[in-house]
Length: 269
Length: 109
Image: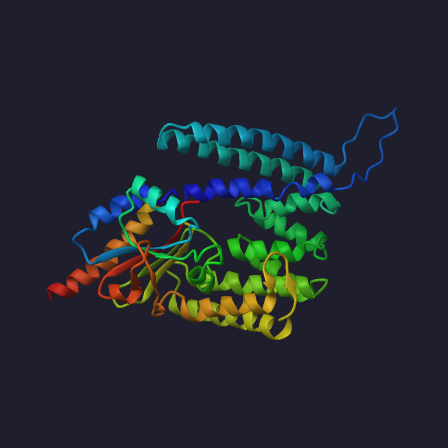
């Protein structure tokens, strides 16, 4: 979990450099008036401060001697995320329709505290934005709070097939993930899976050749999602795995039938 | 690899129980991997899923998009929990303990 928090903090910044490319739309103010910063400039200022502090915290994390020290740094990461989110939200509330505001909203969609509000503002002002498909895919993977509403709206009213395909796929993914959460009642689980399946099949049938950002053909992604839904969901018998261990000896997952197995997809990186 | 300390203690704690931790490893470089496994005292078995520099076969087929992805499978081979990103050591332990004690209960009766 902690590892994940750190990752998400870094990812938040990784999506940000696009802001630097935002054209500065506001012409320089006449010299007589006090300088009014454009929305893009205001957001850039928050972003720059965030990046500086984040770099410092990464250094502190790497230098931390034990888990307690690391935990402290992670706490500061969270505080930093929280306070930047607050600042973004304040700027965005003033000018939700500004093109630059979309980028800040993008970052806010994942926020626990402002996610819902950010979704509302994107729905209202940026439903037709050219990057909305990409954002939908991210939301589907991360099962972000409030995402469902946005995904449903884009799936229906998106500006083009790429947006609609991305949102429909992400909706399927989100519902599939929700069904597998601990403690979901069986009837609700079935309902979520049926709707997930319906959406994924829609992608397969209506948008098979649409190219998604980063993820290739929508039809292929939908197929893989459907395989997972139909064979790898909670309550299903696990498909067997057959392969080599790190010493080159072959073995099967089913060799361990009779034991409880904790299967961990992992790597050192 | 934030999960390693917990996994090491989990494997130790479950040594005599009907339990196995199995990995699906996505590292590319076998030599470095072996060195790191020795250094980190990774004793449990993993499927090799690197296949040279090709895309990993198992994780691609299983649609793994986040690491770690974790499946908890009961003694009959039924998937009982699934987590993308660790839910925390406590939740993992509780879920495992419950399933293991179910098996042990059945073995006694």
